[in-house]
Length: 115
Image 1: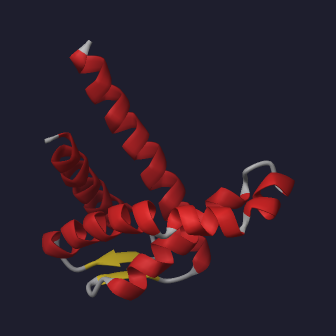
Image 2: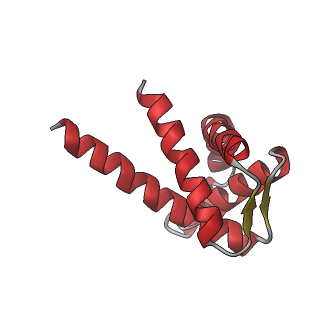
């Protein structure tokens, strides 16, 4: 149930951010749901591999290279999901930062409500 709520929250956030941010376009709610699912799967299976392969660079940049990895994940999602388009690497980077921040706010408020 918790995973379903996270996917639905991510779907809503993706839809809202596509309206707010220039360079990010989405065709509808079904595409937003597919983006949320694909992002979840990419974060589970691909992101750890990328982190391991880029560990020296990540250590050298004190973890800032993880932002680049997040942007790469967004661009992979752009390539995999029809109806989702990100215009540039910088748009993907900004989208990933804002989406991560919003997801942490949503998960923080849901955790606070449980207490």
